[in-house]
Length: 89
Image: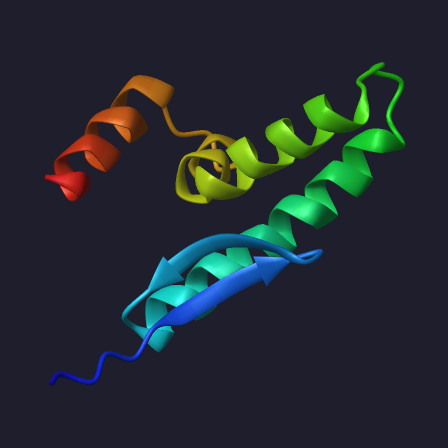
């Protein structure tokens, strides 16, 4: 019999994702923390979004952190997208 260690990321009592690596679980948990902070920030803007849209937008921005940071540095989106695609291969 094999022993398998699983790391479960849970938010508000809901299981979000399961990992076999603590490092990956911690990174995902940190990304979810960033998404929550971004959603809170966006909720204070003049843009009208419901709670679901705020959560989805915050998660999208957090999961694409490298591209967003590159855009703030003045980098071209097409170049950043190509770099991300090649990193994911």
